[in-house]
Length: 307
Image (cartoon, rainbow, N blue to C red; front, side):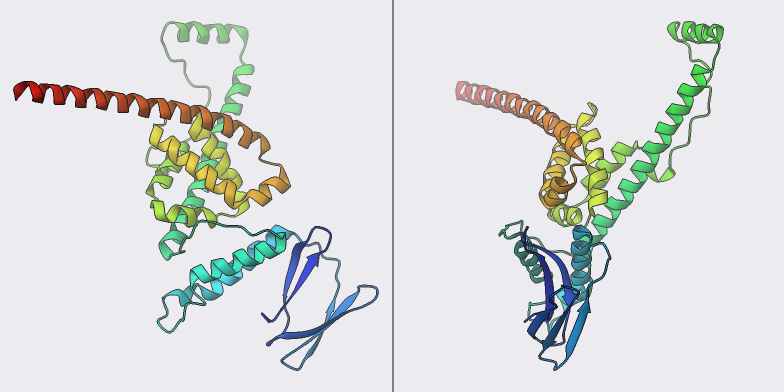
């Protein structure tokens, strides 16, 4: 009835392709005995032949294309007064969620959100920040490798002189000029820039901003979130935001993560650090609560004494 033909993997009960078949409903479908082609007919009174090709199909790419196609086609209708709601963004998300549930054979639930222009812009800003942070980190990692190679080429006498100078509190002359940081960072480190970008996103738009991220960006963001959690200079509020983002990304890209196994080590390390940071956060909150109760008791006691 939705004018489409869906190609399924019968063994895994997983949808592989969605083909725009007819203008109206699809009425009939027949497959060749050798599976080389199939024929379809529909309400538009047409018969179409579909040939099998040798092209390799990547499921995640097809799903991302479907998401982009549905969103791009119907995003402009969300503010249309004549729209009856069937083309609204929540309806689009529900449609996409239903198709994914059909593909996996599972009914899933999620956070009820509304995709807005601000959320899309926030997601794009986050992608730009991820690109910038990775470029800066790679640039300084390359500088550190070159510095180590330059130090290894020094003779023993020069190494000893530099070591004595460092021990005495002096600063040896740098072997290589330090690369200049990108001016867009405004003096922030790459990790601080990611934190700044995350904090600039409104809480009600965070879920949508993360949903916009393709899996490649999500993988890099996991690496950056791990660095945020590992950084002892980050405040507890920043760690809390990093943990919330990690959990949301894990829920959004769970299928890709399970299928690729490329983030196993990162996620395992992130899980252990998350627990440690949350325990510290819990202890801090408990200490503050106890201190506030003590202050309250002292205020009550002093007030009762004055009365």
